[in-house]
Amino acid sequence: MRLTNYYASDLPCLPSRTALFTGRFGIHTGVVNHGDLNADIRPTGQTRGFSGTETFRTLPAILQDAGHYTALISSFPTRHSAWHVLDEFQDWQDTDRRGFERVDDVSTYAEAWLEDHATEEDWSLASFVPMISFS
Image 1 (spheres, one colour):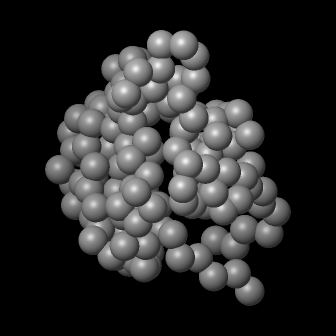
Image 2 (tube, rainbow, N blue to C red; image 1 turned 180 degrees about the horizontal axis):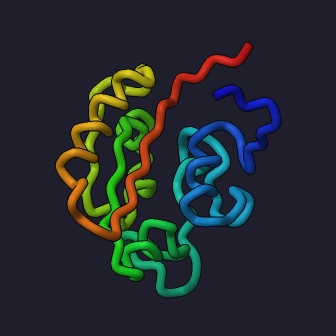
Image 3 (tube, helix red, strand yellow; image 1 turned 60 degrees about the horizontal axis):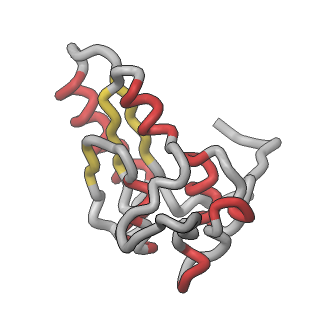
């Protein structure tokens, strides 16, 4: 498949993926870069404490509330220390390629996961291939 008309809500990829899962632009979540404090969801409010903020409901959390089993296949969280991307995924498989996986690397994991869960109902599987070339 060739994509010829595509848009990203935020750039680079960490803010874009955070936007995908939270439904909010980086200007609202605080995630506007790959590193430093600009790569973490900003703590908000007087009761922010010292642990996860749970400021924004994520797509996997909403799917889980609707009774779906949520799974992710990606090395993305380890590559960028973007642990907030894993919020509410019940199953996560790291491809161990640190962002240098290709489609065939990810598809091997995805096919095995799909075979293991083929008879189950109400699941959601997300997978990412970070390295994409455009011509």
